[in-house]
Length: 263
Image (cartoon, rainbow, N blue to C red; front, side, top):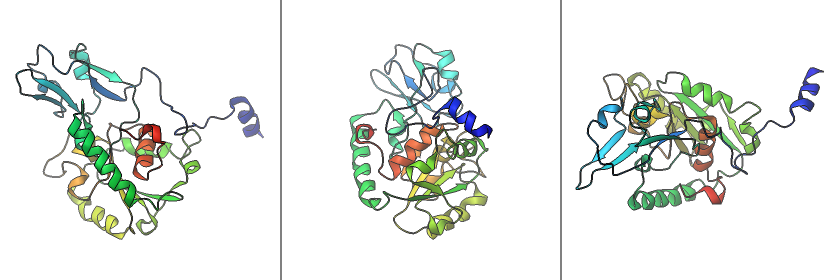
């Protein structure tokens, strides 16, 4: 019985998240943050990003912001301008507002997030026990699927939180969508959404689903799946980590601990 010996040797490997914070350490590339929103030199900054995630807002003192919904974490901005950009080991990056993925946040963004969060909490009040998840690949490169598969392993153990994947949308409470929302998957995605009973929640998983990533919008791919179905929670990243996906799922159904509901 080698599994017994392995269990005694390794102990409990399952994460305690969300009851207690967890992550991947200080070297993890969870998100890009702006060190100086009003730098002295802004020339050439937008050209650093292949997806247009760097925004320079014109003003007397130009403001630099990062759209995490478009960021693919390639690191070009960090490598070229380490005085201005840095990687953040943050894993709780999901938000219920697309606009709130643009950081640093503004007071208007915070107000919008709070308003949407309250509306979502009221709508999903019934989804507090057993939650069933339907995943749809709407044109992804497969990276997000690998991270989603990790949720069912012993480290993250999604089922300990009362969440289960289902093969049919008619039993699903949450729709997790990966990919850009390609033309060939548009109708199938809409039919899946319409087949789900109310109340239901849609999560855009990854940069492709949030904004189209490197390939969208184009003749075959959209600028994010929010153009096809209403999205309640956006989880940025290319791909988002399993902890980020857990954060998005918990945020979607109102099971995130109160201390971490402000984002």
